[in-house]
Structures are given as structure tokens and as C-alpha cells.
Length: 450
Image (tube, rainbow, N blue to C red; front, top):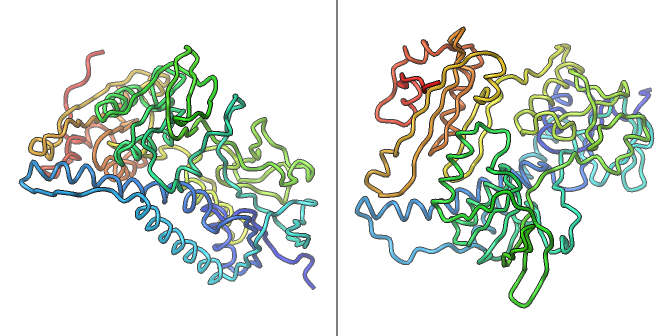
């Protein structure tokens, strides 16, 4: 008779948890997943997917405007925001069904409700207990809000994805990728957008040229960026919301959205009571094998606060399942992880920033700024930036950065080159596809002066 109800119980049915669970179940383990919300997790239900759908939807405004330069006359086109929301929600419902089907086909039992650990091998959900030899924590992250007067008037990215009406005026607090992406969404949809950031520039942690370039592109689109500023209070009045800033000025808005950070979603799970060590921000502390301080409890994804990206959570989930249930000990390689910001225009980046590369030794930097061929006729005032960071000693390409149309699609391919250790000479020896923007990455020859 089995000692436990399951071989594995996963808490959280997001990208990492589903990947780990379905692989383990497919390899013969007895698996259950506990989920208190919707199957699919943050990325599919409250993040990447719905946000990208909205980006697709509002970007038609650009296409319609650009079409005039090419001889098209499109009169009377306008965005029906509720219709866009309805279409987005239909797709999320479909995806939830797909994820549920994946679990069922791999013999994974779904336990609906919030799971709390009562000991290292037991969870309780709605008064019912379930036991497992191994517990996997995959509960993701959650938006955080500061403690300021009137913060109850603000929303987060969760609520922004379900606004029933398009706000005429929106203030977005924060300069990270979520803030930047929503600023682009609402501006393209027709809202008046003000972004408030504490620092001198958006996207802390990205390459400095990329940060400054995108900031300029956002301003050109009519997004107002208030730098080195913070919110002191929010007050609701007859004309909407009044946002008081640290310099005493007031910005009026219909919606105030905070995108100032996310925290590991581990509160109330009983982790510390079970002996699991947590970092100060609540992250589950794990080793290179995703194991926590308790031998049979593991964690993957944003709840560990390592590299908080969906594909990384999926890779960690796979590594966990390979190691425990397929006899293939696997660790995730965190070097050269590509990432994107679906701003307008978007960013694609992989490898080291210029600042990071300089810490390793002398470098050569190649940059190119140009107006995309499409806009020579459309007339749009939009530019593209490309940048290569190269080791001066080994000629190895250390970083590729792009701001411009299709940047994420282009940089995904370059990530393979970096993973293989490609050199600048090999980039130069590669024949480009003409006419494309991507060919610029293999035609940059002039080093930026030191």
C-alpha cells in the first residue's frame, strides 16, 4: 500500500507548475496540482498572454495610420474597447481548457482551492488533507502596492487587464517592463498617459542606450514621463483622481495603475511552519536543483525570485521533473537568457549590457540607429536601435540589444548564436537577408569611439 496519496503535489498551476506536473505524470508518477484560481497561472491568465493580445489589438491604430502613406484610405475606424476585452477573455477561456486538458491527458489530478502546508508532506485544501512524497511550490508572484494615502483608489496590472471601459486619462506609476508595456497599450488605444518614475530613466537594469532610446520613442508617441518623482497621495474627487507628487504638483487621472514591483506569492502557504527557509521578500530559497531547505519540498518559477520569466519557470519545471522522475539530473543554465519588452516599439535583448560587460574586461561597442524602411513612406516618426557588445580580447559577442519592430523575433535567433559562443567575426561573415532590419546585426562594422 502506498505511503502517500501522491508521489508529487504541486501548489500552483502556472507555467512552471504545469510543466513539472505533466512531465512527471506522463512518466508514471502519481501527481496532483492544487490551484486556487485559474489553470494557466500569471502568464496565461494575468500577464504575458492577455497583455500581448491587447498589444496586438491596439497596434492596429498604427497600421491604419501608416496605411495612408501607402495609398489606403480607411475612414471611420475606431477601437471598441469592450469588444477587445471580450475577445481577449474568450481566448483565455480557451487556453484554460487547453491547460486543463494537458493535465488530464497526463493523469494529473486537479485540486481546486487554496492549499496550505500542514507538514512537510501534507497539504490541506478546503478542509481536506492530501499527502505526497514530494511537494513542489510554483505559486508565482503577485503585484505589490505601497502604503500611501489613497492607495485603495489604485489598480495593478491584474485589474488593468479587465478594465470594462478605456480610461480617457491614466497615470501609471513605475518604470519597469510592465509599466512601459501598459503605457504603450493605453496610449495606442487613445488614452492620455502619464508615467511616473523614481529614477532618471525607465527600465532599470536594461542597457543604458536601450533605456534612453525607448524613453525618447515613448515621448514621441505622446506618453508623458515624469522622472525622479514619486506619488505622495491619491485622492478621489468629482473630476476623477488627483495624484499628488513629491514636488507638490498634482496630476489628474481617471485611473491610477501601480506597476512598481511584484513579490513572491508565498504568504499564507504554511511554508515557514513546515521549515522552509524564505528570503526577506518571501522568496523560497532553493539550491541549483530547485530544492528548498526541507529535503522533499522544491520550488520553481517566480516564487523563488531568481529570473522571473515564464520560459525560465518552464525550464525549471522541466529540470525538476527530469531530475526526480526521469532519471536525468538537470540544472538550468541562466546565462544568455533572452528577454523582451513588448513596448511600442518593442525591445529584444540577450546577453550582457554594456555596463555589465565592462566589469569583465575591455569591450568594443557597435550601434546603429536608423529609420525603418516601412516608415520612409508611412511617414511615422519612429526609429530603430541595434547594439552589439563585444569582448575586445576574445571577439566573442557578449550582448545583443534592439529597440524596434520585430525586435523580440529577431533577438530570439541571436540568442542561439550567443549560446554557441559566436564571435563578431562570425557575425560579419554571415550574409544578411535584404531588405530587412535584421541584416543590420551582420553589417555593423564601425566601433563606437571609446
